[in-house]
Image (tube, rainbow, N blue to C red):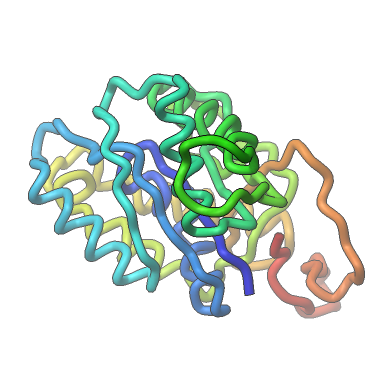
Length: 242
């Protein structure tokens, strides 16, 4: 089993972008930690206390642990202090795989977070630095899609979440101040299910979440690759996992 870190600029970004995959990885026995760069406040219907209750409940639903870095919302900056803070989390968790937001986005916090995590991966391996934990260089950086741009993801691979779609939606709805109270956001869960259905159709499953890698993935066998459905052949295979 692997130590996996999933970084989000704000609480709920991880659930929106890859909540089904998080639940699946936790169910498989991986040690999954969610890192929130900020507490996500202020928002129109939230408060720091309410948001903490919400992200705690979402983590419980997904079956994972959570850590708040505590940078200021709407003011995340790509700087050395932030890089070393994230590197410290990578070291303490001994993260072998790190998920982070896709690098093209309209939200400055998302763009800054991605840059911070990319550099923190390198910083985490360095010796003779005042960063807690043992040096480690995560083997994989994998980008998930939680973007404010209106574009269709062009993923490197998709992860089958057919058995986790309901868990993903419950985790998102734990953020009532974001997706229940504001009427204009209530369709988000429905829209995400539609997108997951489309991504699932690309790999022959009911639902899937898209991911992107800059580095090539290596295979030792074909057992975990999802086989595309055809009219005369039922779905075979498992999740197209990293």
